[in-house]
Image 1 (cartoon, rainbow, N blue to C red):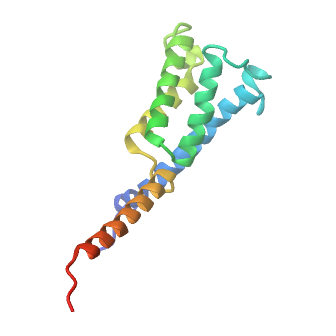
Image 2 (cartoon, rainbow, N blue to C red):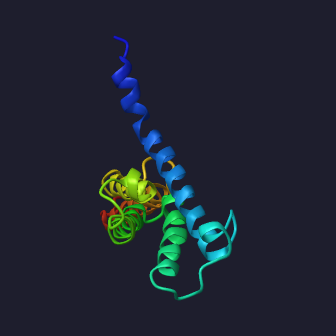
Image 3 (cartoon, helix red, strand yellow):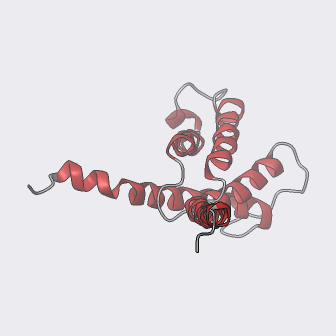
Length: 158
């Protein structure tokens, strides 16, 4: 029996999540880099944010570091949780006072990033993430250590 479309899509799900994670992480890191280093057009049209300025500089650090971690799939769930919270804060503190809807108050990016990162909190890194590579490497190392330990505790028979 040939797998249906749903079966094929389900088998590709970890790779789709990985691609989603990589794109969202890259875009988020670009926002942080623009604000911190004045690249890619800089912060709000040019330049960089002064170090230590609340809340912009701290948000930029979260964007840059969190974006890189999510992009690499390293500590994905924790980084995505912090990034999601920072974007929720940005939306409700900065944008919500301007109008009710994100399209009216300029908060579309904050809302989308917040929900995208919240999704990654629950899905994890998907395929191709360093989280998964390190976990498999650690479990492979512990498996070989356990088997060596088991071999050493077995009685020797001649």
